[in-house]
Length: 302
Image (cartoon, rainbow, N blue to C red):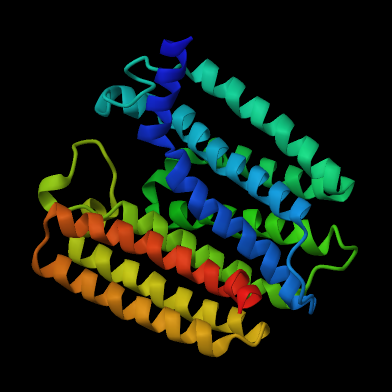
């Protein structure tokens, strides 16, 4: 039993750090529920049941995305990244498949508990995750068009956020607030920031057979694209903040973060070494964390 627990602990540490991801997902899901409540003019704290269901379901969504990647990338991992948990035999694809199914049962039960209609929203996200896992049945074409590949996969972020907001407005009997679209757009660009930031590496940190944006576009261009995504995210976040009358707070935070990101990107371009590449990844996480804190959580505290 101890050995069984230890190998799953190793897996999560390498591929899906529970505590690190859990913190970000807690803010992510809490912000979605809170933002919807703010749009409805609900000044009270979000319903605890909505927060718990949103967190649990969204946490499992991201776990399912990781597991889907394990299936999708197995051949490449076995060839180029044999050090990863699945190729080296730490856990099997069958075991991960059962984990995903068990998680889906939890998601369905939690969603149905809040509202049967929420289960339909859940099903919509499942369908998109399924399409992603099959590369929308055009895998070769997507591989040949990496920008479209990234954009198509990043659409999962506003879909997951839509589910998070539905844990508030749908459960309360309200209709979908159209002005929450800016929040969903911001989540799309936040996803791009995370995705690009984690795949920027120093030239001496590139691995053969591992696709990164720095190897695809060159590290300098990759940083520029990352900053461009941050700029678009800043605009979308500002418009989302405008909908809840929090322009001052959010504007101040995102401008400070954007300036810090520009500084980090500039330093990496001047000194393209691993420690600065890692800081870009860290900056992406810090950006996302504070954007969601400002949009859906801090306004309730203040």
